[in-house]
Length: 458
Image (cartoon, rainbow, N blue to C red; front, side, top):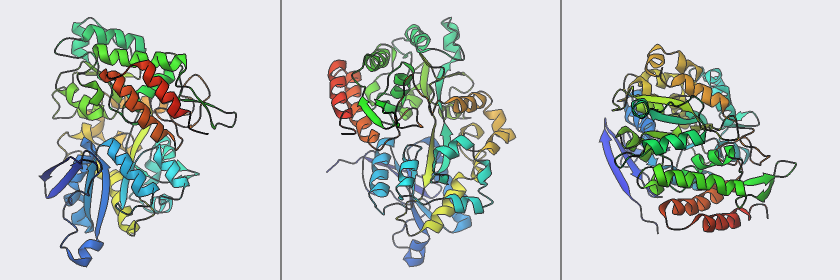
């Protein structure tokens, strides 16, 4: 049995459980199913969400902004990214019934939707005037759809870019271009690296959506790919043992080991966010959604940051496109209640209401999903430092042509859109994270990963 680590906190009548690994459902947000009688149970839904600040914000506001008006009580289970993916696979793909709503992304939504495992949200989204389907940013809606059907509603959307401390770069005599190369970023990172401050923070934690996401954008732009593609676009040969893959992986590992954060093999988005805000790193390459947290009213680095497009090498652009979104599994018996929650949580009204109520203020509201968000005067002012670059980065994300060679699993940038990639990516990033930690070498990790990736399509 797996060991499960759980921590809880309470605010505004909302108790959340955060599970570090696969575990039991967390306590209720606003109320609990237990002891409430049959009517209470029937008006309660269970929702799985990822462990990040924006989701913690909505969980805290749910009792006052949603339950008080709808009468629907929400039990949240907050999971780290890797565990959420395990839960999603088990509860959606394998027909579990633990959750009425689950948070997934652009990798899962089209696949699970085509397989008939998710509710088609299109009829409800179209009929629900408050939801305003036409307000969704088209590229985000399309990424969560299959065959014209919307299978998940975006809570926030993002690309990736470079965040850096303007004051530290100025003091070091470094000018960061708007469109930097990885060579320029690496040079700056080494100049900025000090005993008490890392030059850059890069993901090193195992997982196809953790280390795998950032690394794959580097692989793409440096001419590498996980697999080649047959003429019909299906998987052909594994390319992990190619010179381009080794060169890109070596660059990433060498950079994070020579100028990266402490304990890089255990660091992902949340860890880099914390270290950047604490002044322990000078630059950070990651999701654009982080900018709203850096410029939040309660951020110690507010106003000190610059933002540049995702670094490149052999390609014109390299930033990813992603959305954390809410989906309704076909197995739920409460799809009507689930839609009412999804419509509220991902609709324009929540964004308008949350800006003045969350700790981070308007800059920290969920970005990237709706055109109307960028017309809100308060948000335009609070997000002026990063909103234009975020939208431009999302528009430039090379989802149909992310690298230099033909590849399978498109659209997709930081992942390969085939079912097998989840397992391959998880296993291989375990190998690569071990290299970062110094427990193995690159040649051994590449050989093992090539063997793993070669099983696909056989």
